[in-house]
Length: 480
Image (cartoon, helix red, strand yellow):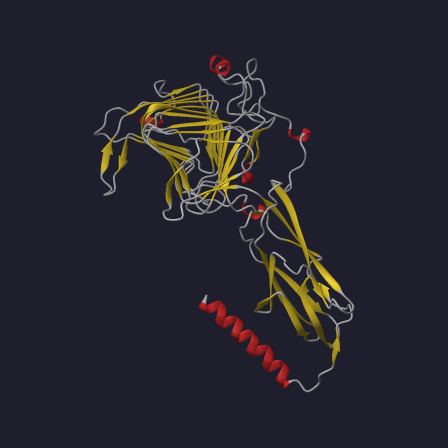
């Protein structure tokens, strides 16, 4: 802030010096000869009564004369926008000078209440230049959404008072929202839950979480940054924490841009996760210690560490795609990591048996030559896993990495062509050149008869969460 203030003061002094030193003033009144960097300034989509980010408008004087703008103002007298003209804040500015072949900056932001009768509204205003003369203007437009805000003004941790989230308007969570011991949270189909920075959802011991999305009405967990520029930015909120919950049943959930999507600790009760997508986790997509889980039609994309990190427990994954093509830096871990221990706060190894980790009809791939990491602590003898009818990126090796050992590997397709649609934006649908087409175990496929987008897989099942498609039948993507 100090640097910013000094910069503004220095800028004003510099302009003042330029004006005082000039001997050839030839100033004319603005007469419609200004030009602008934009005719319409679109501010972020924003929630009710929250401030937009600051947008910049540049005003140019391309003439050979200095121009004096008699007045710059917002059109609405009670406008919800605020403007700043070259470092000075206000709603109305008089006698603004722009030197010849020069420009000024106008900074704009707004805090806009939603119309209570509408869940979504467009708020508009204008910046007027010389409104009493040869008027010019720039439009201001913001989409405003109403929302239910959940927070505690005295503490960042708070218990959720509602037991059901309904699909009437979005929810915005500030802080760590806790489903208390023996409490229940049910989320209806179509609900969107937004989390502010460092916010999370925690499910306590003995609590119940029911996420009831559907194929046509999935549930979305994402940050409260609504600008499209944040769509692929990792780590905008913390994620979901589950600690010895009683019942966790998740269906058709999208978890976007968390630090860790699902963090599950010491959960011996069965957790069921189906038709769920996790993208752009700054650390791990799913991170567990001694959990009991069944996952079907999971898609875990880019993550800064592992897409799936399992430390002891019991797991079955069917028709899931774990594909970590991290593009935001160096990916530090393999896509799938299995261990039979964890590190405590003092970095001491604590044994926790990996009773079973079964992957059937799954894809495990990414940017590394080997995307499966197996770390067995010899002080803990139980380290059981099996990978069956899977597409796997792996360099064969000895012991646990010996893919000829049927204890661990059955009908594995190593280092094959995957033909994903677009890994850079986590579009992990597979095309006609995928070598897992019609290679899935049919028995397991009948147990999960539809892929994650509702395509039947009971007759010619493909490996992974998606049945293959012909990309040429799809609409082009923006970056194609």
